[in-house]
Amino acid sequence: MAVAGSTKKYFVMKVYDPNGVYKEVFHEKEFADKLNFSISVNGTLSAMSLTTVLGYDEWAKTDGRLASIDIGDKCKFFIYDKENQDGKQVYSGFFSGIDFEISEQKEVVKMNFLPNATYLGKKILRAIDDETTSVSFNSVDPADIMRYIIYHSGTDIKYTNLSVRDVGVSRSYDFIAQSNLEGIKKVLDLCPYGWFFFIGGDDIAYLKNFQQGEPTYTEWGSMTWGTDYWEYDPATDAVITHNINYETQVRALSSNKNLDEMVNRVLFLGGGTPQLYEQYESTASQTAYGIFEELHSDERVTETGTAEAYAERILDNKDMPKTSYTCELIDSNYSEKGYDIEELKVGDRVKINTNRNDVGYNLWGSFTWGSEYWKLSSRAIFGVEQFIKRIDYKQDSVVLELSLAPDPIVQRIEDINRDLTNYRFKDAPDIPDNI
Image 1 (cartoon, rainbow, N blue to C red):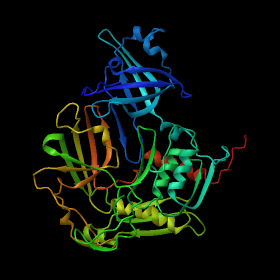
Image 2: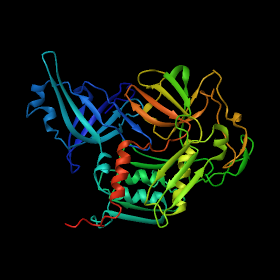
Image 3: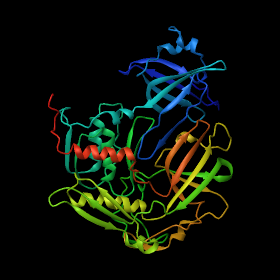
Image 4: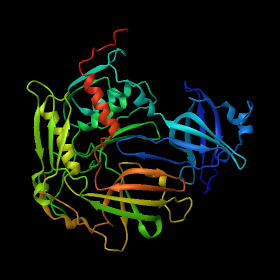
């Protein structure tokens, strides 16, 4: 595709019918827009819209170039540039609809796309017989639950041995009339601190720990930062760290630190007879900042181990002030000193380096993991490794949302309504009566 040595950056769209049969390829020049989408940790790709260069009359021609694309066709987008001369898939989904805007001043034809992960939210998690809408897992690794969900989802989403890593704990949970995507989000609740998932533009599902390549959460023990040696499991792959030069590669940067999402005591209401009701807390955080309580409930949780894992994940994510950063990076094909933005993935780390009071890790001091509290100075911005939570992709640049650690899934109003629906379905038959 690309000429050797070329620095021109462009995308192509390859189209397949719903059965995966190749149909056609379209070049960037047939669109007025560049690729523009986002991806978030604990989530999937966003929807995307592209405006064509055609007016309505040209679009409507039955023998026109774009007439071969039907709603529901699969579309894969590839970037070609100096680093990816053979092409790199960055977005995968399906053609979901058309928007027309016709006036005396202009005619706009916009094509809309949804990611393949959309189907995960539109299909119910079922047992292997493809009929039973209740699926139970007893004392299994959360990674095995996620593999089951992905494998039986009936979508284009896949996983590999490296993309979904074993968590190393055992959990029990009953899924009752939930979508596959809801099931994956629940898997995350069953994992200890540091685990996150996402589904990338390569149609691969990932379940990883942002501390991979470092000590596991059960074996850190007591140590002095920078002097004692941390042993880690060599079977884990190290998380990628991107070293960014603030003066040459950053277009803009902002930072925020606050207590508005602080939680250091969780009251968890489960199920069973008598009903499970437990309290979990982070006493060190309470000493430093006062008490911030939060209520959580899930009547399908009847074991204290699962409840404890759920609560501790919340505490580990929220018992310190939330620190977030937003950073826009310039692509290397548009600036000699830019960065290869296609190399960035949510879950990677970014370290922004400068000569302006960079913070070294030796400032964290000595502590005992799990009992003493550690925190970063509120003045620390540069020189600190940060976790990529979200990427807004613009083709010539990316906007990164960064934090010191992944956040838990935020429970929105629709999630609360979903939980109410799940509760109402908890005593439903395993199979609908008319099957």
